[in-house]
Amino acid sequence: MLYPRIGSSSRLSLLAFVSVLLVAMVSACFGAPSQDLQQRVDQINAAIKAKGARWTARPTGVSHLEGSKLCGWKRDGESITSLTQISPALPLEDTDPLPAFFDWRNKDGHDWTTRIQDQGGCGSCYVFATCAVSEGAMKVQGGIDGWQASPDFSEQFLMSCAGFDCAGGSTTGVYNYLRDSGAPPDSCFPYTANDDQPCSDRCSDWESRISKIFGWGRVNDTDTPTIEQIKRAIITYGPVSTGFDVYTDFMSYSGGVYEHTWGELE
Image (cartoon, rainbow, N blue to C red; front, side):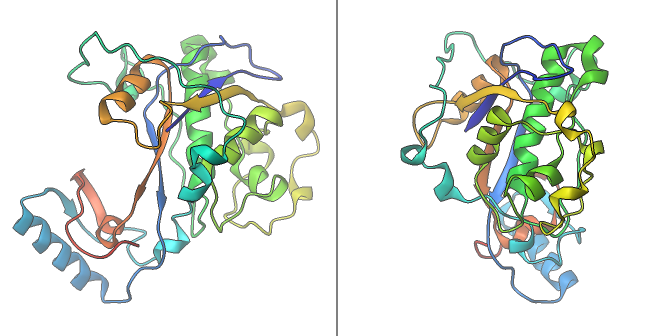
């Protein structure tokens, strides 16, 4: 579980503290079975009803895709033993009770999150998750008056110029790159869901438009923080990116509180 400490190397002047956003989800999965889409959704909804689960399935824009086209988080890349450049986990205050409700999309009457984007048929979820967490934290830290200066990191730049691709990877690598080298905004290099897009297609003034994060760290020093620790990290320190294993039924998720009810691990 990761959170960034956000800063800037160019046009942003932001506070050097970690702020709270919502969880950015990335996923680890492989291929999806081939079967009639509506029949699959009917089977999923029947399984949901039988289990008494609290979510619904329907044909979605990704129901027909193979899981490998979307799910690119590589769990092995997040192993603590493989990390040498992470910030130490910060202590979490465990004496105050957690609030019954917390949503950065409506905090103090404002939406502190950044726009939802479509990764297309590309396993770049780990890039999008890292960028979304970093962008949101900079928005929170900049305050309402600084919203217009909030960055919109170019995922395509990271893929075309930094070596990340549709085959998947770890968020740690992207965090390290945003910390050490930074990236220009999306307007400099719009997303095409194509990791063969040449780096030369970036804007000509990209170097003057680079923004960086100060650093990042873990919620705690284990591979599996508790749910309460994750919640406290979101509220206390800032954005968190996390991953989960995707089953076939999740590709048709349409609403509610998801739990696995049908299908195999993708």
